[in-house]
Length: 257
Image (cartoon, rainbow, N blue to C red; front, top):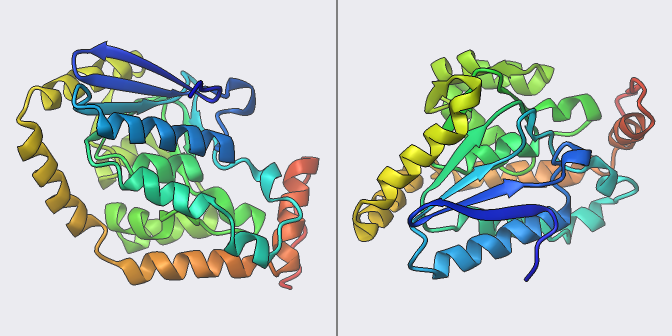
């Protein structure tokens, strides 16, 4: 299929680079983008010539989060049947290594997407975070679980409950980022790492991925609860106030209802 929200290229042998391509919307992860990413990864999974994937965004923004406008007016029932959950599962099911190259803002769903990658290279200008709380939301694509596993309960609680951003340096020191490089070196370093991985035995790499990912994603009950709680929030007035305030570019007034 032809793609509108992502770009595909091969920066080196056996390596596919997927670039999020909605610059006018700060690479917001609308449903179409997630669908295109799912299709591209499905094709790459079936292609023996692809041994490693690089996932990246723009120079100033990796991805600013989900496309909040798509959630306006949604009900709990709408969210229970929303296809995004299966799209996120399909992305995580990709069986080959994914290396993220991150510059600029990497927030909300963008950060959750990066946490689905196996190795994260970040430029010094990168900023990470889960600011959903500012809209009356919570992370809903594994963020509460994977961020806690990556940086620990105390730091994850502070980030998720306050919505504060994490600097690239802190993200590296806390274990969210694999390698921190100069801002203009993130892409090149990601290609170097992906090329090295692609030179290894594909079978051994596949088995290593399975083993490590099993350890990282072992808390299935936590992922299930996160999703249920997110869906329940769509019955609250606060959530719809948060979404309206975001669209109208004003500060929300939460009432606890």
